[in-house]
Length: 180
Image: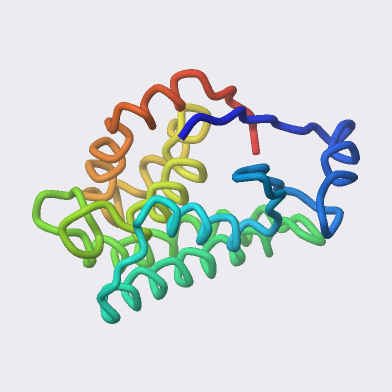
């Protein structure tokens, strides 16, 4: 899938929001449509790529894992919005997150390549996105990798396996690194 990755800054976000149906980002323009809402966009792309399982239980496994990772993300954000609680965040990162990641790791297959079924799935994408963007990308890894190593070391191998897909590797090699 060819695409142009447009990243907005605090100063330019209003330009993107002006084009979006609900006046918020992200916005994906594809197939002659302007799509909004990150989870709806995610599902659209997964269906478009044929990555939503027709097996009811596999679909449940993917959805439950996506929900669990969303809960972790929302917990992390809650330490920073509306008031920054750095001490609480550090405690959660070091005392609770490793165990939560260990629960995710239990879903990983023996080859550390898939979390649901035996081919790339929704679960693989959302898990990669969470782990890579929040914990293992170059700007985050120096401080966060140890948390993953302590709670779920096989997930590091999963991330390495997943990001070796040629199209994803090419994208990550050119994606601009930002703090958030």
